Amino acid sequence: MAVATSDSILARSLITDRRSTNFGLKNEVCRGKVVPCRAGGKVKGKGKGRVEVKAAVQIGGLEEVKKAKEEMGLDVVSEEELREKGFLGMRKTKLVCTIGPACCSPQDLEKLALGGMNVARLNMCHNTRDWHRDVIKKINQLNEEKGFCVSVMIDTEGSQIHVLDHGAPSSVKAEEGSTWLFTAQKLEGSPPFTIQANYEGFSEGIEVGDELVIDGGMASFQVIEKVGNDLRCKCTDSGLFLPRAKFSFWRNGKLVARNSELPTLSKKDWADIEFGVSEGVDFIALSFVNDADPVRQLKNYLYMRSSRSTRVLAKVESLESLQKLKEIVEASDGIMAARGDLGVEIPYEQIPTVQEEITRVCREMNKPVIVASQLLESMVEYPTPTRAEVADVSEAVRQYADALMLSGESAIGPYGQKALSILQMASSRMELWSREENRQSILHQRRLGVSLPDRIAEQICNCAVEMANNLGVDAIFVYTKHGQMASLLSRNRPYPPIFAFTSDNGTRMALNLQWGVIPLLVELSDDDMEANISMTIELIRRKGLLKPGDVVMVVSDLTPTHINSTAFQSIQVKTVV
Image (tube, rainbow, N blue to C red; front, side, top):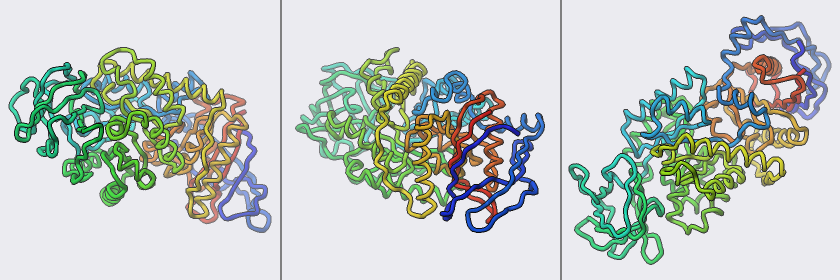
């Protein structure tokens, strides 16, 4: 069968004598699964690393291929984008949308998925667990019935002081000069100019004259009176109260230290985590992480609690988390740079450099990073963003952040779908410009692997990306079980997109957050890489997504189950004919 011709560079772990190598298994694609069958070829020659076998690959009948195509887990959005823009035009930066009352219907969720939403974020600060369960069910139905690949993330509330209720389902305007009462009392109804805080000790240590700042600057107040545990405050900078807005206190230009005795994970957080595990969410974002211990604690709990692979992201949103950034990144499966809360604790002018540093550290340590908060904040109210916001989005893309996140823009704003389309357009344009101008930043190659196989895999991925860029290949195909090699390729930010084939759905959903990775769910053989390659190339070619002359690079980290199997860590270059 003439699917592809190949020139291969093979690197087999623990073998230094690399010589001419072919794969010698005859394969059939039956019912979408790879079934290895002996072709009668025999190993010839002597010595380690010298394997010469005649190869024969056979694709089954049209019915078998049709059934195999049905199991080819390429989501409909990526397929349409590939048809429209080609390999090098595919968007690399992933998009996260916060789901709220403005976008929770099946129709709205489908529109967001069609618009490029890769991850749906559910903020456990808001709404009931029944509401969240219903949204998760709708997303799962979209994935199963309409061919999307949208991962689900829950965001823990954390131990924080925030607005409990301001008496309206969406935003409320605070006018300059108006007087408001902040209280922890549980009040009946929604008295005007009254804000209920969720923490009884929210006013401890606060003095008359202190400044109260909403959501890092959305609105500001001055404390004019303390009445018991309540605070009476005068609005000094008019602005919006969003539902469950966070607030902080300042004195003489410095942040008043708060929450020092509150745990990172509250009782409610543990209950929410248990809920997320039972609902099969893909990511848990841990709020107000000040060191690596809560991350390790949660990962250990998830390992013991669930056989499903749930990734733990740490939110960097405090001065303490910046001071221990590397240990937090190392302990976590990814980072969310929550610039809104972070901007409350450090000067405004430091945010750009801090964001770039977080992104750099995450990339060096091979952990995905989400840039979040206020990307298109004006679109909570208005149908178009400011030009400065678009420039901010483009800068995050230029820094090679893995993902961008919408918060209130999609959760409560009336223009969530348009905001998502602006993220999509801005990121695609900046990616194209960066590639054309050859502005890819040079990554300090911090060695990650400790064992020899891990170090080999890392070097293979580094070399593969350099080769892919220099040779101008159209796509990189990686065959992976746990996603490690796909993430190592992503770390190097190659020009062509990375198609990650895996037979593990948890891996597929986790890779949804990795820059430039298009994850596909497909049955793979651990013992016959050539069958995997032939089957997947043929299936994509039959979809009309590969054409003669297209060049793909192939790498793999599949571990063979048999000692004498022909599975290799390898780099191969194949030209479709």
